[in-house]
Image (cartoon, helix red, strand yellow):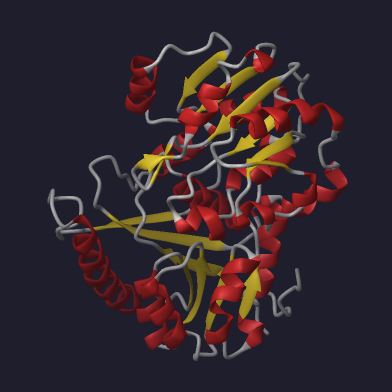
Length: 379
């Protein structure tokens, strides 16, 4: 099959943004470009801080690769009204996607697309275009759209973990059109190892998920216990307003450090100096319980960290889960026991986790897209 040198990435996300999903998108695009494929990124102008300036995007995400960016008008209610936010989101997403697919197909010669947007996937599938959908979570709307779209030979899907695949596999008509492909860490940020700081524990990520706490308050409360007095907790992430609230609401132990929002490079340096990485979330969200494949986990692996995680089904499905120390949600003794037991385990060897680098992930993705005429890999 003839090699195709261009992908158009259409998404309802906004850039730049301090979110894991925007970081994942840009990291993937940068690596696709690095591997010789031209990329056009198209997204809506629905945020006052959004930008289509490549210099701004490069500086914010710490990348050097260049690609075309198109920020399209978004004269729709989502982001502009205070009430009925969920309805406004779905309505605006639908209208913008329909218009965008129509205009893109009319103005562009691109024949290959990738997206995280359900509605972009739907409208491109209707046009029988070669499109890959990255499935990061489950929803009722997604079930309806996938049931329709996955009947098309030209519509493919990437699942971030096996539970998402099991959830939706009944809709897959062509088995070769689906793949399970985890997130991946940036090779360039973790190639140089740093000296570890004894008993340093680090959490990297946004402190709020879908507007609610990831339960960082529980972790903070555990450091009031004398059993952890010799350990240091580093918290990297925002928003800064929530950090201020945490500091105001309680007196914090002196062995807790807040770094706020850092660049990917600065965050990687803290991880490389740490000994333990934390995976936390709240069971109030089904996505966190069952379907998430956190990017930070693969960064923890690359930083040679021992990993302590709340005992959720999604975390049990991660690669090398047998080496993770799991604690029961909101159980202080269980959490502290995991931290103390960490001295008895070793991080995963680089020869094992290297296959989860972004470089390897994109090789799999491009092969799956058959950009080089190859069959998709079996992971």
